[in-house]
Image 1 (cartoon, rainbow, N blue to C red):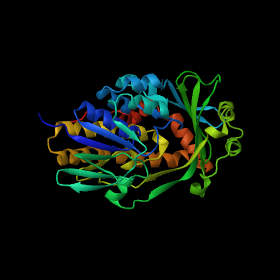
Image 2 (image 1 turned 120 degrees about the vertical axis):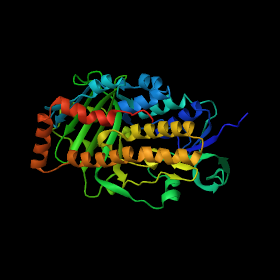
Image 3 (image 1 turned 90 degrees about the vertical axis):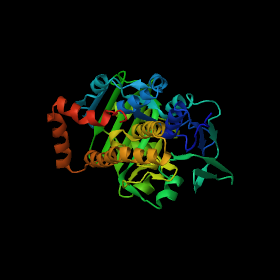
Image 4 (image 1 turned 180 degrees about the vertical axis):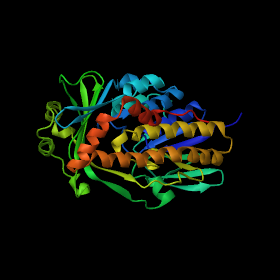
Amino acid sequence: MTEPRKAIVAGAGIGGLTAAIALQRAGWQVQVYEAAQTLRTGGTGLSVMANAMAALHSIDAHVPVEQAGQVIRHFSFKKHNGDPIARMPIHEIGEQLGHPSVNIQRPLLLRALAQQLTPDTLTTGLRCVGYAHRPDGVTVQFEDGSTREADLLIGADGLNSVIRQQMLGETPTRPSGYVAWLAVTPLSHPVMTEGYVAHYWGRGKRFGLCDVGDGQAYWWGTCNHANATDAALNISKQEVLGTYAGWAPEVMAAIEATPESALLKIHARDRQPVKRFCDGHVVLLGDAAHPMLPSLGQGAAQAIEDAVVLADRLARTAHLRDALADYQAYRHPRANGIVNAARFMSGIEQAESPFACWLREWYFRLTPQSSLRKKNLEILSFKPCT
């Protein structure tokens, strides 16, 4: 009887957990190593868009995620005061594709994925710090000085990936030019109907408000800043309230309802796309491969797509390096194209000049729903592996 192939996953985030599920269901032995002492229990929210839900469905991992989140039913762009600009047909696209887009709290998403792993797959409190090639595999090095051998190492260790750094060297992050506040808070407001999502646009700033179910709202705000890296070090609820003074009542209500301790403040960043995601028996996925700005809500979705395509290629291709090369060739144009599209959209959304803001508003007002559907359909479609 042939021994199952062995994979080590560095990082128990969304992409790493999805890869572990997909590989286990393809017959691999998988161990996931997470540097933190536990799976993330705090944090904010995110969207698992229809393409990601379709990818999860292809490995029969979608039901716990949908049950833990809230299906998006209403998605709109609004002016800073709450006046409508345009409705986005996200719900209708989901119905067309057969898979909804879902808002969810990040810890609940991680739990929904982790519970689908076989027992004893996940080890926490142990950081991968590097790797060494072997003729038929890889030796993975850990912070405590120990090593493990495997046929494959998956670098799913995020924006500051040590696996990426060894593979590609120093690849500096690109600043977005804005800071972002994020939080999840209990919120009851007449505007917040079931499955509500709205993006509010101002000059050089925006705000997102999302129903994540169970009376909880996920919100985020962005604001242009000349020195966003330093600005992200200081968190103040009063600063957020001042930034959005005079905005829609539901925006102010969400901020007011949020305990200061629940606020997260970051400097959003991405990286210049690269063509190389593989090195011998080592492969990158998610933010370790192609970090992106949040404007299209595709960070988690692209990590999930990576994981599912990677497992598919490994299952259908006997030679591991050929499978990784196929994964890289298939994922490179899709993921890196969305990195570039997210940066482009971010520039539109963070516009400051009155003329640019006016142009943005009227473009979305005048664009037919059929055109908005067509533009979003390409991003929200997960194409079957071929």
